[in-house]
Image 1 (cartoon, one colour):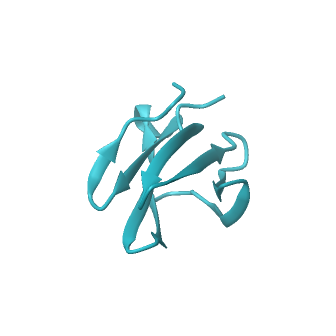
Image 2: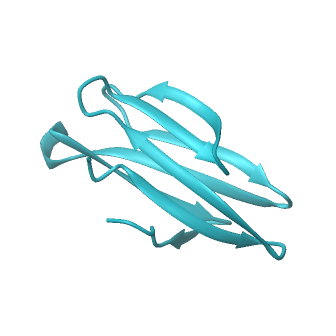
Length: 89
């Protein structure tokens, strides 16, 4: 598991939602899921990736970036611009 593999449980408008990010260190493939459904599949190669999606009247931003000189990746989630701590590390 890389530092980019993270999960968040966020509450929006009284409902809980699960956001999961999985990143393959071998292929650079990123998979972002909302409540178990795939929202986006992409790859991270030479530049960092930002994936944005609406959740009700709110905006969720998932950031995946390179760490340790490009030998690893990490991810973060922001809800309406505020950082949200992941469930697992």
